[in-house]
Every structure is written in C-alpha cells, then in structure tokens.
Image 1 (cartoon, rainbow, N blue to C red):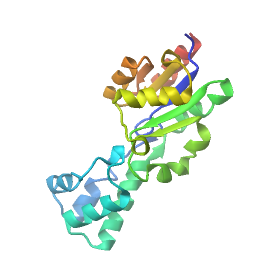
Image 2 (cartoon, rainbow, N blue to C red; image 1 turned 180 degrees about the horizontal axis):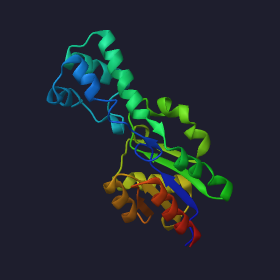
Image 3 (tube, rainbow, N blue to C red; image 1 turned 90 degrees about the vertical axis):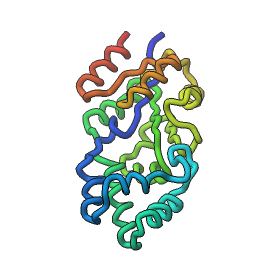
Image 4 (tube, helix red, strand yellow; image 1 turned 120 degrees about the vertical axis):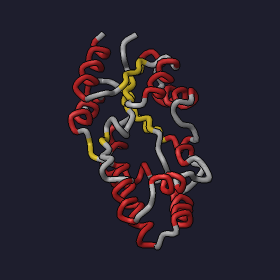
Length: 200
C-alpha cells in the first residue's frame, strides 16, 4: 500500500539535544555527584505516562537535593533548555512540507508534563494532524497500545504509515505494529529513505 501518513518523534529527531547543556554543567556548578543527581531523578511515578506533575517533580527534586528556590529554578531552566533543544531545520522543513503533498502528518513523542507547553515555540501543533504526547495519553513507546492509538487517530491502515524515531526499541515496536519504521541516524539518510518509501 502507498504511504498516506508520516509520523515523527520529537527529541533526537526534530529537536537536537546538546548534552553539554544539562545535566553535568548544572551538577558541577552546584557540587553534586552524578550518582546523587541520578538518584534524585528516581521519581515517585513515571512522568512519561503522566503519573507525576511538574509541581510534584519540582518539589521532589528540591527536597532530595536540598535546593533553594533559586537553585531549583536554575535546575528547571537548564533542564528545559536541554529538553527543547534546537530544531533540525532541514528535517523540520521537509516534515512541514508533507501536508502540502497530500499526506497526513503526526508526531508521537515520549514526553513529560510541560512538554507541549515548552515545545509550543516550534509550532508543532499547527504543523500536524495528530499530536500524541505520552504523558497526556498515559501510554509510552514502545507499548503497542500507543501505536494503535496513533493509528486510530490518523484514520489510516498501519501499513500506510511511515515513522521516524532515533530510539531503536520504538522503531522495532512500530514495525511490529505494521508501520514502516526507520531508525533515524542522520538527516540526509532519513530524508532519502523516507522519500524512497513515499515514492513506492
């Protein structure tokens, strides 16, 4: 069947994350070991499926690390700056042109509370027909149910969906769901592979 819908991940695909921004620079400025910071991020619920709120995450980190209000503010700012990253402009522009070619377009992202609001700066909602954030639907990749949900919302058969993700378990799960899933390594290769898939 021809491809009628294209689905992209966000982090590591449409957004480029710079690990030089977080967490090590913040950790080093405040004198925390990597193990202590990692332990503090052992949250009382999974933010990717909406089990904890932004307020609860902030309070947990402040308590576990004994941070002042100013320090936890700085932690949040650095974390969000890393989370949102920078656009892969070439990939974004290619993705943004798909609706004009008659294709349905979706984003499927493992996300945390606040992700939609922070990533609003990129205009993703205006770009797509379907936007699935894991923390909003209570499911996350590679759970088969999140692929079924996205397929249902797109309203097309699974074998008409092309998918791009940089996380291999999510790619493998999408293939099991019947999608044409591509493991994102670099922009040029992904663009070429997707074009070949759409042209079949």
